[in-house]
Image (tube, rainbow, N blue to C red; front, side):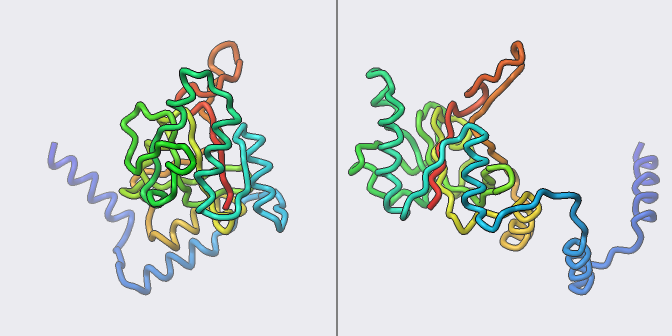
Length: 221
């Protein structure tokens, strides 16, 4: 078995040819990737923020543009109030978790009980950032990491995502190029979120919240 394995690996090595790990080889590889032609793509407007917001709403997200990060708690509280939860759920809906980058915001002042920790799976509200947004499809790009626990985007009933307007790119190609520039390689997990969780498995009827959040609210700062 070991001999057969080594023969297979030897053929693979021979097919790949000699490996050059030099800086010059890396530069050539980067230049090749940068010059790679994209396939047909839709024309995009100059105003990517407006395009992103429109497409996100098409995907059943709700979107709001706000003036500053400090205003996030107030806008989250207003959003939850507008949902008009029944009394037995109203208090639970205002308790949840956020990413560490939002820990210092005045959640209590807005009447919210938000903790900066990963979700344990029973939190009703999850507040996160996003690596970037894709204007073509209204998609949020979320990278996994210690400071960006992705379970918060997946397990809470209500996901509120904070997206900087300057981090909205035209398409998926630009999103992956941005990841390469800023991180050098892909993280362990990458999530593309286009609206609430949904399924059409039963009688082809779309049901929201089937495998994750019932609602996604995006605050574009």
